[in-house]
Structures are given as structure tokens and as C-alpha cells.
Length: 69
Image 1 (cartoon, rainbow, N blue to C red):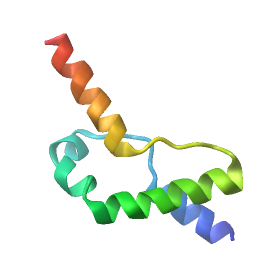
Image 2 (cartoon, rainbow, N blue to C red):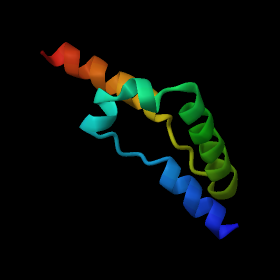
Image 3 (cartoon, rainbow, N blue to C red):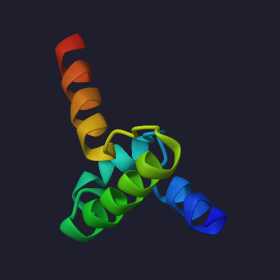
């Protein structure tokens, strides 16, 4: 069970890099969103910690960045 939790945490990193923003189409494809969703649910069930979806985070960062320019 610990291995599954560790794997889920690796798949659901909270950090959004410039590369992720530049390649949003890849990171936010249906396959990756589904995999991350499973990882986020497993993490929340096992630890009680809710992790936001990286696609939502990218959208927020891009929106804030465009407002600041």
C-alpha cells in the first residue's frame, strides 16, 4: 500500500513548471487527466489530503499572468 501511495504522489506533483505550461495540451490530455485523477483520489482517501488538478492550476497561473501584463 505504501508503494501505491508513493506512486500516486509522484504522479500528482503540486509544482507547475514552465515546461508544463508550454505543453499543456500533453499534460491535460484525457489519458493523463484520468491517471492523475486516480492518483488524487487515492491520495485523498489514504491521507485525507486533497491535491488540485495540475490543469486547473495551469489555467489559474496563465490567467493571473495575462492579467498582470
